[in-house]
Length: 314
Picture 1 (cartoon, rainbow, N blue to C red):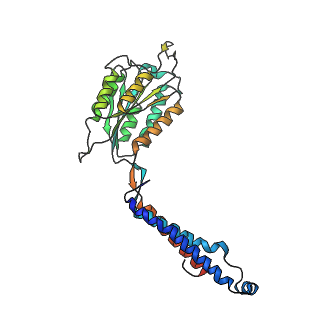
Picture 2: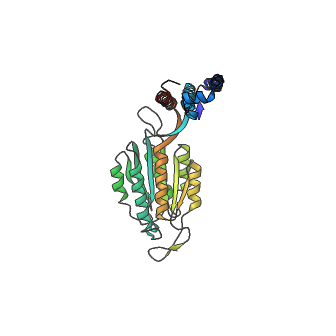
Picture 3: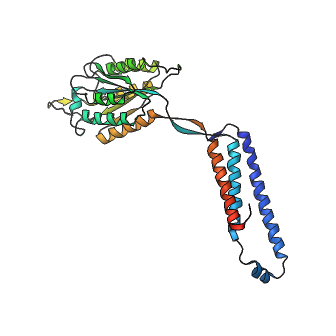
């Protein structure tokens, strides 16, 4: 937490002074009581005193003053706030190896499930698009606020063919470059989430596309799925594992992160976390109103307890 007017915090030195004055007043009060020489008679007249309870309202009152002083300094805190706008492109590998059953019920079905949950979690003001790639890239859904269109497009993903990661990434960048700014000319935060289970074996070099993303400041988060070891594919032939090195480098070059999912549950968790990161942003926010509200509540509580217990204000 930080403060816009930190010099106002110097007023906090008054708090120890008030506490000292209160303790001094209590000491004088006890001194006056001792002057009553017949203590047993005093006890019979006054009865049992309030004990420590009499200190509770003044203590709460001091807390109220402290909250008010802190509010004068205009405190700031880093909090998560919803994004006004954002663009997201989902890029999916639909090569033949995505039919592999090493992720229940298959890699492609696990990817579809994660994509559906991801889109459902995003606010309506975020534009989403969908790109698939195998031998070449295909725009399944252009950037749109129609999330239902994207959901329907996810169900059309069918594996088959090779793995053109670079083409898929490049197609996503082309979509995002069509909406670089909002109506006020402010750059729209843009992100790509790319999922693959293999290695690029056709099309442009993925690193060239990653360099383009870096130049136009678009973050690419990459997700590798499937087992890292080589397993038999649906046709009985060996299927290559995910090229984690390439996916890590793409993410690193663009300021994104690489994630690996060897199971459907892990994949769902990754996409859930990514949806939160895209939907929310942490930024400094003034929280003066919170301290004022706390001060008022403490002030009212101190007054209520004092009036209720002692029929006077602290």
